[in-house]
Length: 106
Image (cartoon, rainbow, N blue to C red; front, side, top):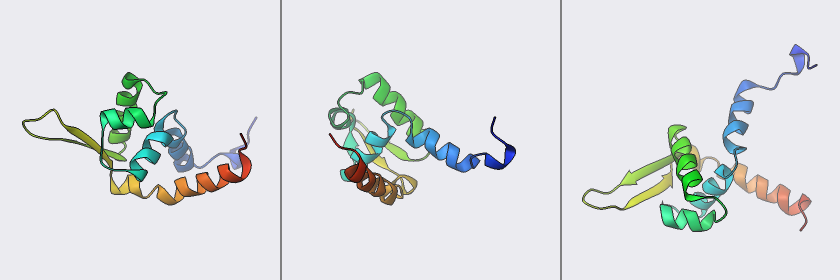
């Protein structure tokens, strides 16, 4: 049993509920590397994620104000990019890369 003194900060827990959700990190990383992107391009970047799941994750990230969706008038063209809030994840993602390069061996 965890004592009250050892509880995780709710904001930290909320952050990991977003970043730790399968595919979200890869979606964010792809948009950090190249933005804006169309759905098809994102689908290729996150290749093991089904289109249905990718659409669901993009909607969730949009709801959290991390990703923005832009639809063009008189066109089927839709682009996804990061909001300022999403762009501020760059140093965090860079540190994840540093950690994985040091500790994850394949």
